[in-house]
Length: 117
Image (tube, rainbow, N blue to C red):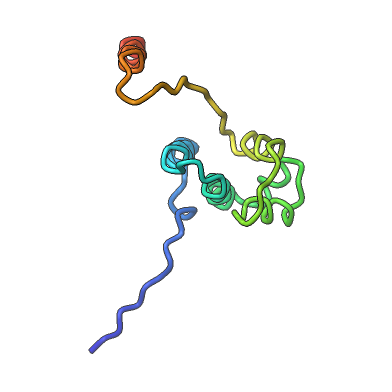
């Protein structure tokens, strides 16, 4: 009987374009449920996909400090997060968060959809 050989899945190997990286980060933000380490690790995945050394140079950080900051074991400062996001070509956007089921929330979503068409 043959043994099944498996390899560890690395999302960084599948993030090829800036659009894929942005979509991945957006999905991680939605799924994080307040888990800052999860979000930081997602940035680390994108940085590895882009090339950690290049991202470190573009962010003005050493490669070692970037790796530590994005390991998920530490809480990097917001300034570091902004530098890394800038180096990755990502931006933060805001949206109003209203109670689930709120009429206002539904009307805002409808307004957004209508504006996109």
